[in-house]
Image (tube, rainbow, N blue to C red):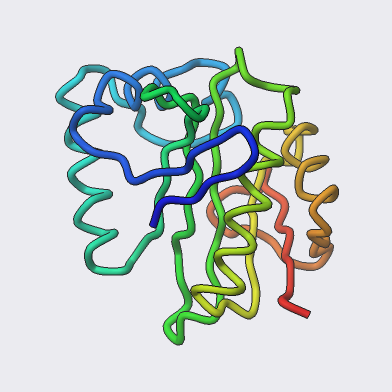
Length: 168
């Protein structure tokens, strides 16, 4: 499931990435628009990795760590999750350490993952839910031709907006 772009490698995460996952998922800036229980310790991060590995094996998620080519360390993650029952729709999620923002990294990763989703997983639609105040995420989605679903609401979070991208 490894994907490569011009500058990046998107790869499966494993126990050796515990410190990176802790750094990414506990970062205050990364989490400012995300409602989740962030890891506080290496044990928490390891628990998350083992959970993702299990969900990946069960084909419940497709999850990649993002790193520069030639580097082992992860600088972000990107995934498909929340698949529809017929596996034709999935939600994309992503996060990137702040030091790597505004360098085109997530755009490069998202292009590769969208292509994988449509061509390998044969998805018909990709959904993205982001905070309405997260301007960078909204710009990223619009750049990749996601459409804001004006009438749709996230019942779990009123501050979220929903975007979608169809295979056509």
